[in-house]
Image 1 (cartoon, helix red, strand yellow):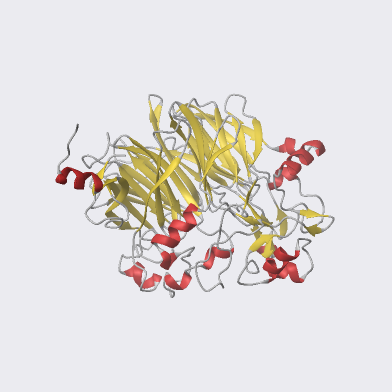
Image 2 (tube, one colour):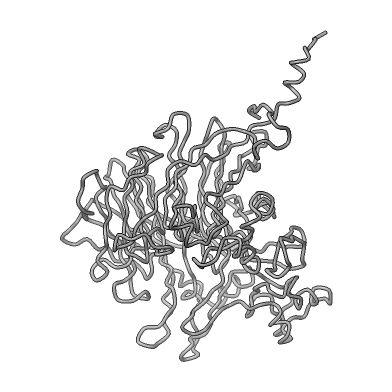
Length: 578
């Protein structure tokens, strides 16, 4: 018989599983072109990392700048170069990407046209920055620009740096007072040498075939603007395809590109440079999960409703688990707006109800008319869910979480349900479904603001490893919350377990004063990078780097294992690996 001492029994009873949590390290606010720190001035939009040298490249779209940050000391982030792009010759930067291989080392930047957003954009390849370097240096200064499609929103290198995939969003607008909606496309820049390249284009024009159009529409792919606002002529479906973020398969055979507003993902062959497939992403039914859909319900009330919402992911990435490949998507959601024409594809449910647009059961109709239920919820107002002119299925925007997809079948193998909203409510209620838009308001005053649209608004994702544990990190593009999940080691498929959630910064002062005091945190997270432990400047921990647009900041975090939330479910409990 095995006998245990009293102390051994107490030890076992007090033992809990370790959670992975973030520890705050260095924090850096980025100045504008006048070298001033200004709230929400557009100094940080996208980033790229050289993990070996621990160098971060951050571009600011609105300020047309690049900040290059040395991450060697995670407690003191140091700017080694600030570069102001020439708006007349280089243009407004949209994205940045770094790649290094035997073929060469590049810092690629995509630019909007110097003429107008509907004109063709371009790529410039720069040399990697070194400490003491006075300026960015194009690799081919005699002819630096590589022409690509309109509004090249996102770029990604293949693993060997031989190809740069470019998503040309082709955003609509006016040119000389005429409506222009350029076709969306995906370009592949084939780099034959550091100073020589060709561009191959994957076109979506095939979707304009009548049969293909009907097939995609019936499958749930969205076509928002179907007529030219000026001439009332047909606006081709391909013009309204909106490619955004890119994930490239580990074997470099395919690029998967989110078509966020269209609620789909395009698969692009990197061998034939064609669109291999367009996968509709379907909708999330809220009769099975809960959400808070009102900012006038006097609190944080999550409940079920007989409505649906489009997943509409923004960021997308690959990860590998137990020798299987998966795609992960941040299901942010996005309404489609063209301000110059006062066009939006959404409307408050109560207004559509007042117009007699719904044909639904009486219980749902009552909720759609009630501001404390669904009346304040933004729903798709034109084509989606309409039969014979009436809306019979109510669609909102965004999955309010994240999904794990099988890239071979594009089936959804795991989905976060209502966990993100619930953990936001439980651990950070003062910023529940909150936004950060007005420097004169406090975070608490902007609480619940996004309940009527996209809720948590997850906008950034990354995976990494820590102490033998596979982690997925997702973050909000609004209220600054960062969620950590672990892939279960006991399940063959991708099953994720919540670990912790973290928010940097204060809540009891206005956003403006929080910014001025350096206590605004990660407001409006746009991008995250991961320095793996083999390149980490910190012994025993990888480094998570967070880039945020509204706070115009770069944050560094290390990871540790302890009980989350600290001190709950048994003070002093001993943490052990699960």
